[in-house]
Image (cartoon, rainbow, N blue to C red):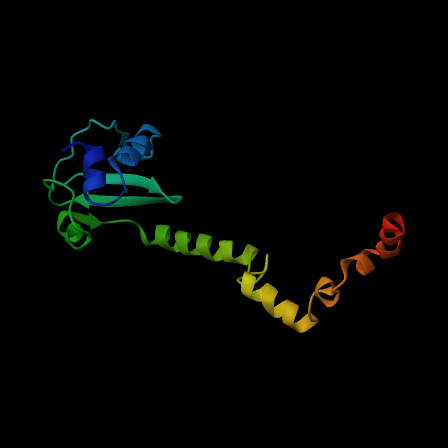
Amino acid sequence: MRIDKFLWSIRFYKTRTVSAEEIKKNRVSIGDSVVKSSKEVKEGDVIKVRKNQIDYKIKVLQIPKSRIGAKLVPLHIKDVTDKEQYELLKLRKASQDYYRIKGEGRPTKKDRREMDEYVGNDIASDFTDWDDFFGEGGEEDEAEA
């Protein structure tokens, strides 16, 4: 089976097109050599994939006939990725939360409503006569007369 189809069939990539594009960008290799999309995958191959800024290593146990369900993936591959790579991923996710703490930033619609209730009604809703609000009531009356 072709490597682009294999990575798609074991659900490593969402579409076969995305799989082929990642291979073109030299993010997939078998052993130490970078591969093309047409490279045939065999049982026992160790595939290295660079995804989400970490290097995954998967060992091929079986070749599936077509795309398989998520529960069947462990029957076809074995994850042999280094533990340091997963720790690195956790550190990167934690550092992203550092820049924007939940609840900061632009207020939600609910937050705005709560602020309006706390502050009070809009200034404009207190005025029923817009001419008095803008101070133009006397000028229009003189022009009509």
